[in-house]
Structures are given as C-alpha cells and as structure tokens.
Image 1: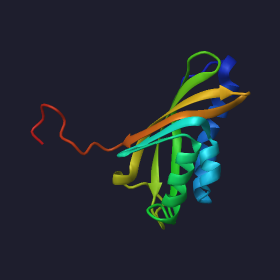
Image 2 (image 1 turned 120 degrees about the vertical axis):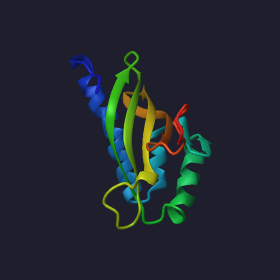
Image 3 (image 1 turned 90 degrees about the vertical axis):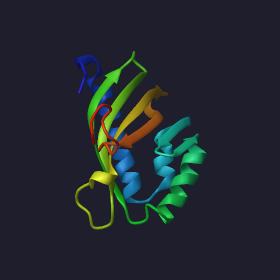
Image 4 (image 1 turned 180 degrees about the horizontal axis):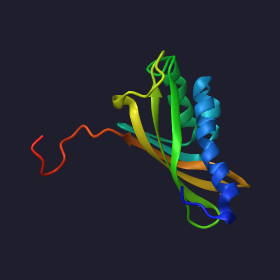
Length: 144
C-alpha cells in the first residue's frame, strides 16, 4: 500500500471501509451498505450502474433477497493513494462467496477501485467500480 506517516490514520480509515462493506453484506443490510457512500456516490458493477445512496440501497435490498441471498463478500486492500487531504483511491481484491464457500471462485473474483472522499471528517465512498479478476477474453495478439 502507498502511504506515508502523515496519512497513516487516513489510510487505516479508508481501508476500514472494506470491513464496513463486508459487515453490511454479512447482515444483508442494504441501509448500512448504502451509508458507506456519499449521498451522490456511484456504484458500477459489470452490466450495472447505480447513482446515489437510494438507488444503491434499493438495488442491494432486492439483490439480498434474490441473486445474493445467503452470500458473503470478502476483500482486502492492495493499494491506497491520496490526492490531497480529502480524496484518494483504494484498490482491492476479493469477491462474492456463495453459501458454504470459504474461498472465492475464479468466476466470482474481482478487483475494485474505490474513489474515496473525506466529508465532515469521515471517509466515504464517492465511486465504486469492480471488474472480474480472472481474464476470460483472449489476450490481444494471442492464439487463445
């Protein structure tokens, strides 16, 4: 992770956002999940775009009752960089665990970018985007 002594506390607070998301997911708590975001935060998943806490909350509320029912998420920070004292980016890897799984399968593994901002002394998620961690398309120029 990219941090310096003057922003170590901020780096810890930003990294803790992952734990807030994991905990909210563990309880299938769409409200707690949405509260990690700024009021106008965005969430981009493959094939999905939601803007604002309310859209994010509504999406997760439905998803926890349907495609994510019984699932958990896991993730860990790979890198944190700051752009001044009130903005930064957190890069993570993790994924969704199906019921009974203890490790993320290749088809559920992701890498994510978390655009973070400090508002009223608290770090929040202004933008989140994830992509599959395992490449499923052929590498340009390869024969596969």
